Length: 320
Image (cartoon, rainbow, N blue to C red):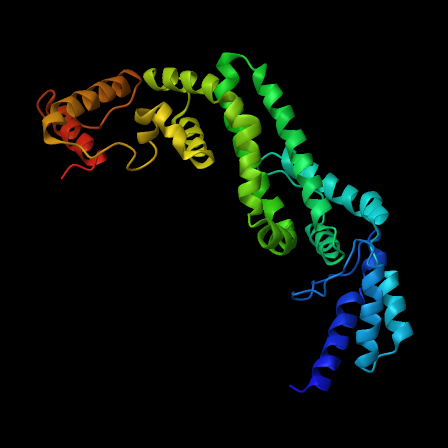
């Protein structure tokens, strides 16, 4: 492509990117808008005024009307005040709803409008402020969650921690995609990080780390008393803690090994008898709580316990 053709393409691309017919229809619920593909034309500051001159010059070289292009650009400038008074409040409200929703709840927000809002702020160089606001917002939420857990009675503590963890990880499934442009063109590019990992770290630092040494003794106690809490709750918490910080395995390797593969070293033949005894005890506990293995009439007493005990334990520890 020759130089003249490239200049014309630049001018056209700039006009199509900045000529946003839905910008002034935010409050009324604009028509469906699909943000154009990036890369974007960078703006030199949050007001966009400096880049307006260079944009107008590019438009002139491309054969476009300078006054028309510049006026369209100025109409779409998002100033710092615009961001604070109009755009961030929209995002703040949506984040609130996502963080506090229960599974299956209907959230009355327009994902399309929120996505478009984030995109426009990224175009206008408000990414740094938006990232800071997002992190502060979620940090405040997690500190409230942590305080609520601190006053939870022991018999409800495990279940409430599980709800808090599940609710937060569920919220991330919506929050991270909504901020995809900020992640791609600010967090990954300038900070060399990832939004999802940053938000997971917030929960680790402000909730899990503050409660791990209160939570772990209760989990170990529940493990020694079958069905004190449901197996699904135990699995959810243990897997969640491992996702947040894998080194927490060292606090209770035996507990984590029940839900995370390859935590314990491979089994050795000399320990098979101990493994069998552990499985037999587990099966006795199950039967005492009403669980049976079906028709035992064709097996000698204790035969199935011994057989399944030795084989199950050996397999779970990787014995060959």
